[in-house]
Image (cartoon, rainbow, N blue to C red; front, side, top):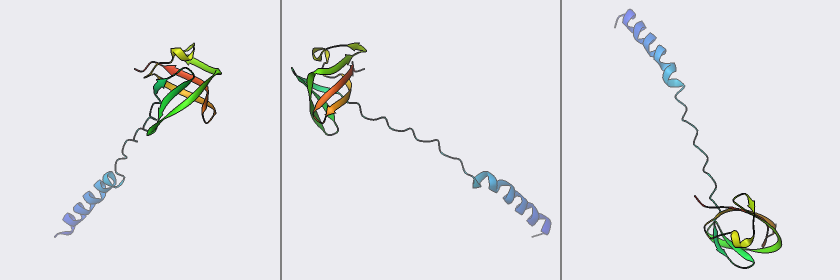
Length: 103
């Protein structure tokens, strides 16, 4: 093989290598959103929510702050199927329940 041809092939190989060497970075994967906490049952003084595999029943006291769709409300306004965010007073008692209608 003549030197000119060999030099041309070497030049082409070196010229295209950087385009492939850096590679293309994959788009970052979106972070999965946390699972929604949903009301599964409401009784006179407790609310049951789905939490992971099973449910968790939380006591509701007269001091529990309840917000439904952005408005101050009572436990009777919290309905099965609503999406909730709960702040605990202790492991079994809700301090605040913020609920919105599921979409």
